[in-house]
Image 1 (cartoon, rainbow, N blue to C red):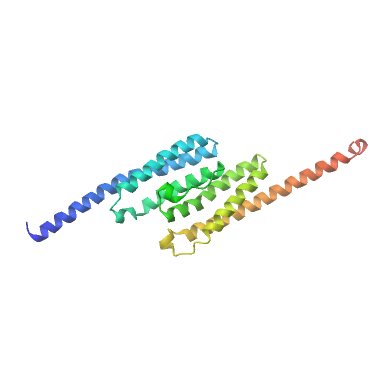
Image 2 (cartoon, rainbow, N blue to C red):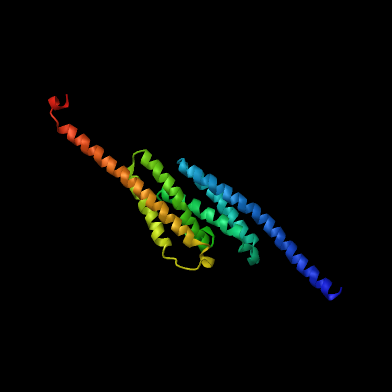
Length: 214
């Protein structure tokens, strides 16, 4: 076989293998993202056990993707791998916070650190939605606790002052987190003041003489 033909065949075989791996893992990526979205919806509805079950499936898919792309760093570094790992981290972090559990470790989840950090940041958006639901039900103490956890996430993320090429665009995520927290803080502060005012009015009415209330 002429040298160029041999080289071409070697390259073609490698590209065929890479293309096959890419097709398979793109399917896994879509499955992971879909499962994580359903997990977050279940967590919002209070279906924690169903959410955990779905996350177990997503974790298996993340592991399959990692194994399938072992030795394929050019594909593993592709954007879709980062995106699905980020969605997985977001779902895991959100479920942990609303369930009163510790945040998961990225090594235990089997995902890259930039994906974990960005997923943690995006979980704050879901925590805002959950906090507003809690406020509508009148549980302001729980809302304050959730806001404190959102603050804790922000203060951790803001310490990662590295180029976006290393963090997957974390600076933009962190800026978004700050805005979400400040908006939520303002709404919670208003609700707390209204609650205090309502209590003060009720106390004042309670001490009025019956003839003053007529």
